[in-house]
Length: 633
Image (cartoon, rainbow, N blue to C red; front, top):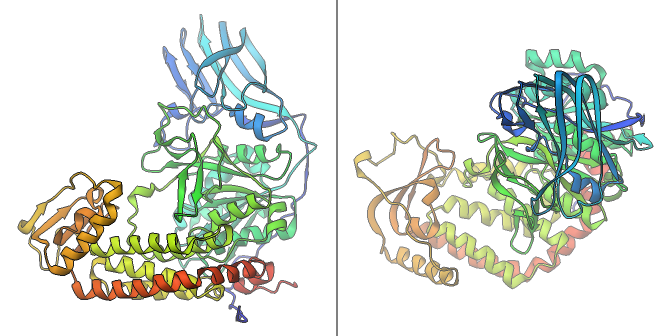
């Protein structure tokens, strides 16, 4: 690699007070899961927390009110205790569930369990009356492949109040320090709301030693009035930093960089700025990580922000041979309604995205900091690298945050550059790329974009591959310069522009004809269909009508039939106008052919260069340079 130039620092407007991150004395019993009965906002259904089985009941955040004859259980997404995960990945062998009750008549509680097939059994029961505390015990010795625990309450002959429900285990020798690191870029309101949710949960706030906010934008979080109130609440625990925009990789790494410099046993909890935060999930992740026999990455699941009862996927893995991330792990649920569905099978993850993920500082010390990839695949590569070094990732059920639904994001944007470049880097580092097979895969995808008349997207992908072949020097500035250049370069492709549906240049509304897709081609004929579409487009054998195509119907084999297609953007906020351009298609095709030949010839040597560069790229010195800091201070 060439010698990198220093990056100029951005002055911080708030002094950063580094909290003392020290081990804590363990309590007599260690709380790993609280009884939470409603969500952080009315947008989330209460049935995600507690379920009214019979009669009438009222749910509050930490309290249940059952009317006479009612039955309520916690056989829900946030109500279940992940018994299988504790048995498999922690040192816990027994768990207690305790709660306070207040009733004027007989009442009953059942401790219930499921197995990996979803069959339900009763583990223990207790009858009680009056006001007091009840404790039930369960041994974790029958849950290895799957299963959860929950409680079911019945107010038999009088109203019943339940409060202070907690699942506790034998405490570890000491409790590790914990620090949250939030990366933000011009989402000041979202970030401030997330901070407020953390500060507003007194129990969570007491278990967190520091909260780092890494602000890389121009609309500063610190300018919000709510931020000042949160800062007063968190006090010296809050560390607010400003720095150049180095993408998600640079923002999250800054938190890891800072915390690991203070304590090499701390739990670093990375969180997106724009999530809807469930504070209980952070407590559960941190508690779980304190009980593993060796340092373990612990992630929260992603729930859909626009559809809050739906789970993105139970656990994820990557297929480097196809450059695909977000693959469903074996047995995982995906896009599932979690009011109706349950996660009974234990599902092991390959990595966890950083919308919310805990990384022990020991892992950072052993494998280094993340790669300066700017955006996309930084979390995936880090999880793969950690596993290769012997550190597993556990995606914990019943710990989740709400994040923007992925299917509302259109893929035709500048992010494709980072997606393809960084996925190739990850594949080069952690697999043996087969040049011919990978070249064919890349050529096929570019060709599909070309016949779809997504010339800008094809160009963006070509640029990502070219920069991958340029080697590790492309990462020297952390991605700042290429972000601007790729945006500027894409602007010359008309179909990358999103239009209002009532303002389509050169097209009258009356000219549009809705054309949904038919049946897809057989998988074994896809390449043949692709070749046919290319030939027909070059020959001008396309349908002259102006097709209006919904986002869900915009498959390459369908859009490519038309001379002009007006395609709904996945965000549903506008449309893109795609027009056949033979000259552009030929230019991109010729460039692709040259590039794929070069890829096949050079990918082996380039992969070796990336592997050799990893120690320097992931070093504290390199990141200090990118942050404009003096590592010796």
